[in-house]
Length: 204
Image: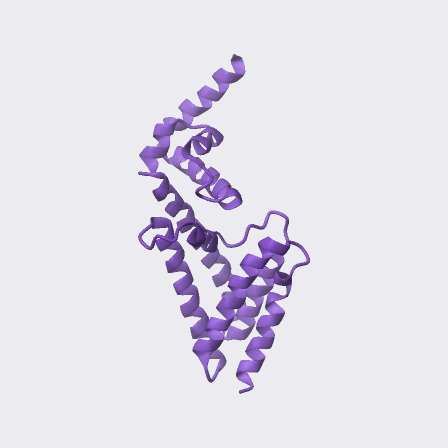
């Protein structure tokens, strides 16, 4: 009984601080959505794991769809932070930038907790073009395509669009194969394959 009262006390404390409750809900949703899929997780499991009352969720997020979109917006910010970090580490050298990014990505695919790209996974779960989660995912992928094509131009590729798209296909393939094969799978060599593709493209 004392333990139950303590749990309820924590819930009440979070509910008195809407911003803290919203952040906790988003943290929990991010973890559950990424590991198990968005459709597989209900709001009851999220509020129970977060230790908040259900009204707290709906005060912060108008619906589960909006919570899913918020999760992906955070994922999007984190993705571009990683991307921009490697770009900044290799100023003026787009070839080194993309290879550094893919070296990191390849290493991530080898970890036991790897579940691919949250954006790609969400796009597969939500084929409806007007779904909020789908829109965030599509925006992320379109921007990645734009950046890769621009980097291919900077590298001096004769057919920059084809090279940029080829790099995008390698990246998406690594996201999927990382889930299928796990450690030791083909995703670990995504940077090396990108290096070969770039070399072949620039040699033309």
